[in-house]
Length: 326
Ligand SMILES: C[S@@+](CC[C@H](N)C(=O)[O-])C[C@H]1O[C@@H](n2cnc3c(N)ncnc32)[C@H](O)[C@@H]1O
Image (cartoon, rainbow, N blue to C red; front, side, top):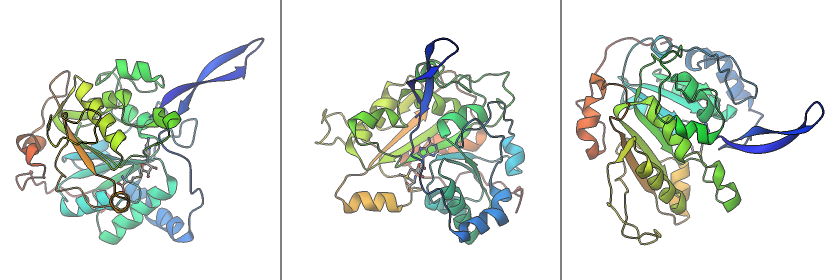
């Protein structure tokens, strides 16, 4: 998550403190193997929503304008995935649900190429990717009042608010948001880099439609408690599994608040690794409630009726529109 860290720079005659952004990911794997470079060259333009760059490699310009309906070439139920990694989950879902649009935000450049390679191999075309830091990108893409703001306290104060004058404010809201196995930032001094915290909950609330689901999963206990606490303390979300599945390792062992594993969530290598290391997987499912939310769209009705059964229903409306780029 973007938080601020004071850094000193020399001003004209004085030293002043300016904020610099802290990120929920580390820069790694800059070099890509030729195979992925080729994939980007050949298919990048069909999957990547190419937005004007911001002032760092993982930001977009605050003036970036994007029309998601045009980018997908159709209106359809929308799921947003943050940090798809190599894209196993989203490609699995996209293949099984061609009637959905899937928008993924990934900060790791080689990851973007891997996602595309995976999608091409699986012959799925209902995915679009934006390369960048979701905490910076999403408020801009969905025209939130927190667009362009780095200060986490201000972002939290603007929770869920859409800036109706923002050029991207008319983009459709998402029916689901996935944050599966986000970087855990285990060391105490790094915890502030965790994505799932109060400021990001406000962004999640702004991009989800009323009734939309925020699904989270982690294999690290103390991050699971933090995720549960984050959704339960937000007035804009309802945890759908309050008091369920209590865990004796929880500092509040009676409390629970954990969801069953959603049927649409694939076992990725991150989950596999956690299980092999003996860690417990916790799922959390929160529903965007009505406070200041965008009106309900018919497309999401099956989810709202159903969540709770934690699967994408066969009732999910089917749309026959063709996809741009297919
Ligand atoms: C531990 S991996 C999990 C990948 C995948 N979700 C899975 O379950 O297999 C976390 C991924 O999230 C990405 N990530 C972390 N913070 C992000 C952010 N703020 N915006 C976009 N991607 C982010 C990382 O680059 C990485 O690919």
